[in-house]
Image 1: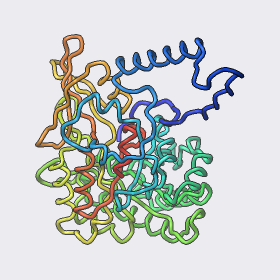
Image 2: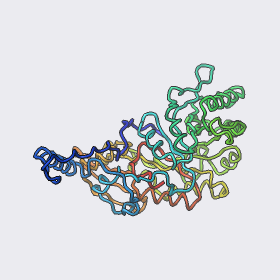
Image 3: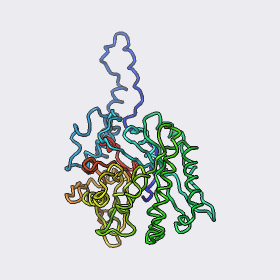
Image 4: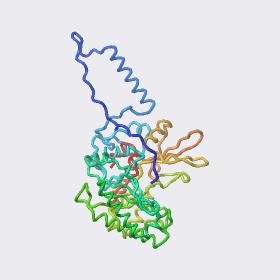
Length: 425
């Protein structure tokens, strides 16, 4: 889950100041008459709106819509850049209705403030919200839970008022596993630090990311360390379940564990295997499966081919179908802009970057039948680029797949998408 670029806070689309009533007509003046200054003002306003439309391909301030994206005919394979520019900020006036009935975990990052706004605006569509706030790391011989400076109590309070989403911040375990996992005293301290933070801050549990750290250190190649890691996750989950949430007294603290996707035909020690899932199922409340980042600058292509996502689910659940409800199938709200020439480069883009590319290059969007994703090609300074970014249709296909399997969703991350994506949830 690499950090994406920061986004600026902005006012929600469709927010306008209340209009003022027209002044009463003057004596002996027809009520339909318009003064010369007012006529001039209206003409200039009209011309200004036309200028914005022709320069950007969209209206300056799209109003909220009482007609759904489905009734507006927007969820389809054949889509134009003009349609995206005109419609992407038009969000439904009914923001609480859920189309996707299974659990939804939404990630929010402190370097992208739009995610905080989207979490408040669409809080009813999420069962879990995970702000990316904490790291558990070693400082000399001490364990430290860092990240308290990121906590936004005002934002949490707003979420609580608007919906029932559980606030489960992400904790990345950065401590060296060769030192941590063999020291039971340190493991106990790690658990105590996490539970203490949940109690004091009023969290509903945590999302733990440690598997990628352990893989990076090579710990998963050591059968003893690998087993100790799994035992630690079980101990952490059982300990969290022994404590009730401060904000939801009838609810135990929850543990959601982040797991990587399968990238090879044969499972390796680095993969989270079906047996690992079975071992943790009684102690963990869910698994956030990172089914995105399939392609990279050296191998440009789709972000998350649907067949690959299905393969990952099948590898995990073929022997664990009874645990399908515990999977939060990962979908990306970001895209990628890849260079296709020599010295390949490029990287992640957010919704606002995508919109600017559409305005500048006015591309033809194409539907790729194999990956079931939209993409377009453009050239800049004699360098050819391929852009893969989610669409209403590509997301809807993945939501249907999740429902067919009976899994939930995890979204990385909600500040990177286009506003009308949320109506799909």
